[in-house]
Image (tube, rainbow, N blue to C red; front, side, top):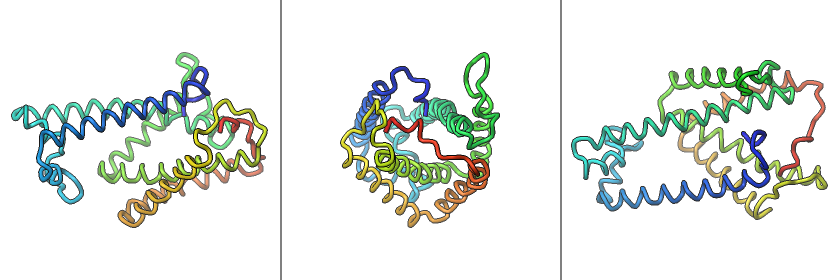
Length: 239
């Protein structure tokens, strides 16, 4: 989402995605190994989850094994700091979506303006922050995460499917970066995304329908703004 502001995006974005994902997988793996070392499997299985809502999180249980008096507080503080960092990144990058839509004429023009001092889409950032606050006050953490993941997988799958569409419609367009493992990798990703969407619909129908309703709420704005506007694929050559 921030590709437009990255130097040499054809080289740096793939590196950031690949190495960033590798680091995250390594950290997650090491953390889970630590859980298994510190706790019996039964304690891990009975940690906070949908089935054990009142139980302590597995991280808090693990921390209590070596910090019995401060383990829970330490984990809560670490989770709070991590959430603030993730929220900051999500707001700054997520605000680029209304900005890009406005630049393409699909959203209100004011969202396409950059601040003269900071050169960031201030209106879009403020709007994203306010809307996030409304959502935070309207549902539980689990409901929000389930809705976000459900909606995100829909758009991730559709975005990946656009690789096939754009290659068919624009076969000769310059492509600074070619999709790794095409066509197998995008096909596998689309199938996994579809499976996650269907699984969420079956296991959490209320949350799924809420996510679909929020997505559908944007359709009137899109239809109104795109009426009479010709299709433009001029920025689609990087897939």
